[in-house]
Image (cartoon, rainbow, N blue to C red; front, side, top):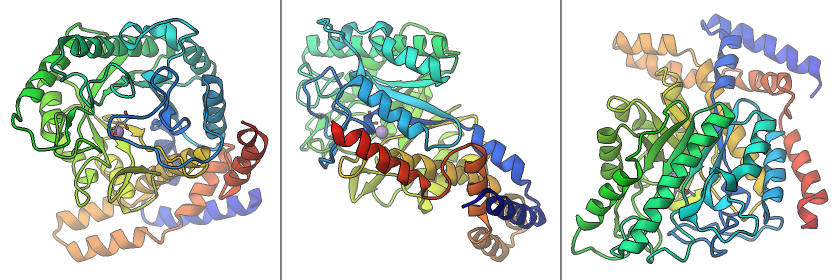
Length: 419
Ligand SMILES: C[C@H](O)[C@H](O)[C@@H](O)C(=O)CO
Ligand SMILES: [Mn+2]
């Protein structure tokens, strides 16, 4: 599409939204400045560079699409390619298994920021902030699916030390990159079948987390979150860090709670949980994902739930209390396209929420006029959103419409196809 046509569309949209009392430029500014954290592990199927070379912990990346990033340099190059396609403020969420050991015999309980120096200097050059994740899986020191809750004191101590090291690494990321690093704790620990003792693992989990978080760190640079989960493959009956567990832990310890869109019963939505948990917590972390029948980590679509999540953030004015992250790993299609689709969708949903004439809809609700509330909600769907989106992408010098796909195909031919 040529520039003049895009500008014409934007002016038309500005007029229509203006009549509904919406300032389009303010909405663009708001949607553009909210950080969305893109996860490194979509690029390498979460295999990492330091573990046993396969994914454990009850999660799977299905598919065998060619071009998986198998080295840190390949992963960084693929992330760079994705960043060329995505408008708005982006952070990078790294997993501890993406450490670069440089031939050293170091285990996860001995990592420091030194093992992430390659990532840090790359991030500094790009002005990127980082988030971080300990890797409590895909490692010989796992006790089946148990890490922090293992009955073996040596195993438990190993993983506690890993957890400690990761928040220290996160603090260094925050200091060096000048943006707060959120370190997210997800542990697969649980049982395949019905537990006899439902409290033991949870007691061990509380005391292990308390040990990890014992030493105060600088909250300007690092914050920690605890993620909940209903079940995993091989831990279908019981997960120690369940919803109630992680929420309770976060509230009582002043931590962030991580809501993953794929970690609840399929009829349960995280969009409705945001304003509920923020009554009791200062912040939440979102893992945007898409479960299809189970926690399958499909690529995020611009569907009703994604839009409702962003409505909950923007319409409630929570943009500074919600950290937005991504969490899917699809190996069945081009991995860079996965990032581009989901990250662009996330930004679209933020922009759509910022453009909604929410003042009029809230007024109708306050007046008890629920007919108008529903009618006005529905009208937002046919307002000229896409003209504003195209204009926004153009001004950010990012591909407009499906142009990004041509670039992904070129990269596939010239780079991925040669791996
Ligand atoms: C790789 C992540 O740590 C992992 O996906 C976790 O966030 C999760 O959601 C596990 O189901
Ligand atoms: Mn997650």
